Length: 294
Image 1: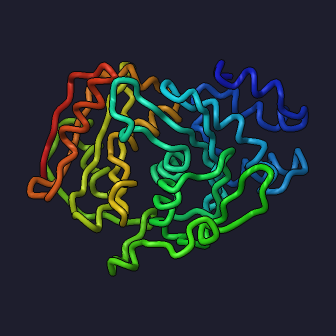
Image 2: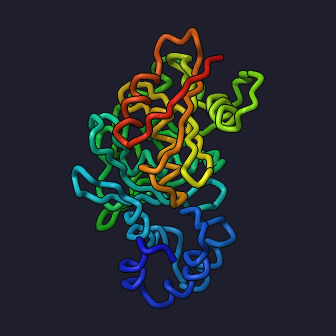
């Protein structure tokens, strides 16, 4: 079991400890539980979906990288598949605050990168800020998404974001998490470049069409790829680097041990991720950054 779990695991009810142990003890625990695993855990503990999500919040919060705020937020998302995904806030010392990732963004991105095609609910240990409410409004679940937090009655995103502004106001039909392949092609030999291009092909950028993806190579050679997630309100958009860092962190990687990174983006796009990608990676100690365009 990863040391991050030790304290919070010891504080869980005994039945939940017993149910979770086989999964947490695996060296490559992916910060998620597949639908059949969720069913087995619920049966073992007698918990329903919502109660299990609440119980998992302390585990999710152990992934928080809160070097600036020291405010640890965990989130659990339930997909239409029945899978459960963990997420947490991430902050990067030396980089502007705009480069941080909120827990809700983390868990949504995590589910998306794992192949989930829609969310039923998001459970979080603190109330979602306005930034996150707007980010969630880009999802294909729309304002019907269930938002759950301790001590409050279940509510929908529509309750948290009345008079919402979203894709429909800009006559955009594409929604975040709906499967898509933009079909960009390049002849590539580098596996890192292939991963970045594949991520760009699945990115969500219907407002700028500035599709992009980032792939990171860890010191142990593991690759992590992230996709750009654009938002109708622009500012809550999540850059592809942050998406890759989310996956790296939740997969057990160290975001300050990146050997090299590569950005793939559209050559003629109206905006670029290049400068922000370089600057944030420099803050994390990675200077080996390159770019390909399509």
